[in-house]
Image (cartoon, rainbow, N blue to C red; front, top):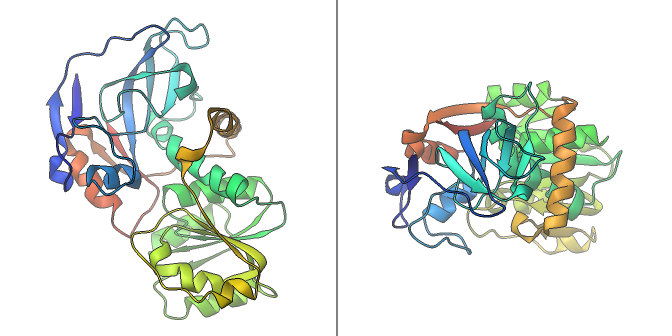
Length: 318
């Protein structure tokens, strides 16, 4: 089978397009023939050797994918079943992946394989950040910094379905249009020198109850000035250190809470994916594909995902 292999940590050029032996499932394992794989920032950090938990070399990257069950002894997933994959045993940047039953979920017929590959990490991260770490409640005001990316759009859809008032930022006209299309009450260009004043005016009164932050090293200090009393900043992503004024936390009795999906228990993940699958089936949730690359061009996908002009999800196709 064709797959991406990483034999040393480094820049995107270490993503080697290789021929590997076909996979053979063991007892209790499912074999999935993948048609698409999602590309996530965490995979770029791991490839570069800049993540706290690094895989053993050599390895095939990828947490998310979608395709058809090729082999299974599980009656819930007979061969031919359309599924999306959220984590695997062997990596998803490949034509095949071995999975446990807990790692595969039904993909509704109306959803494409590319959309299926955009579900696992972004939607689970968004749900974990909003409802487990952020304790979001109906009627609260939410600001999503970087709402046009994969996690941002997932959070926007989940929050709207849960009855929150949602505001978002993006850095391009297309991104701003996309945020509005999916129901943000207002969208703001974070490249505009006046955008912080615009956000304060939009929040009105006390400020935002929750801020979902994708780039804390740039925005965290400003976020703290936008919070309502006892508000929460939920840090999903950061690319370096940041300086803040602790008084902005003290006077609001505010919280800064970090997010890593790796801390979720199997039971918590099962609950999240059951909810996400139901949202897909009801069409309340609809992954947006921003760019698609053939598997052999994984390096290009990794270069693009680290740019700041995110619009939807980046996927690889087989």
